[in-house]
Length: 212
Image (cartoon, rainbow, N blue to C red; front, side, top):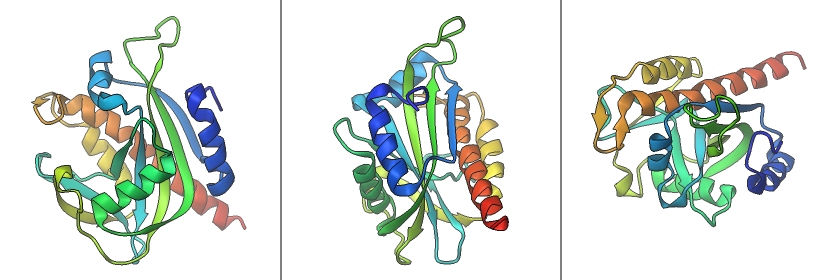
């Protein structure tokens, strides 16, 4: 397990696995430049949570921010503060971004990332980690509490739409975004990874139920 996550986080992954099942997907990805990760990990945020929120109609919640290109929606994510537990960040971010309380159903995936330009002979340091959870919304409340998130709108999607979103993110233009401090392409390729991992994890759940 320490191969996939920094040693200092391995204990927390083990604890999460005991509570919510081991991650169905664990991947190490080489993507992005060192400069990209320097921007992503500002304020010493080295981890994030990805919230796969299942709505009462069994659809999954995505959102778009005010400065995103037209029709770009994605799963909700939020940074884990330097001295914050993953679970604390998960509940905090879910409330800040949706105004809703959630129930954790499963730890879906843990992805770790190394800079693409490093580690051609020896692996470079792990730059960042994403913890993706399957969550059920407790109620129909849906409004951003933290206005600094700049959430413009929400969209409910089917599971298969996750792959279309990943393809769309992969294909964003190689143009600089002042809000992201990087290009849309580099950001989109990074964001596409967790959408594919979540889809794979949900497929694993469905296949497991089908064979029972």
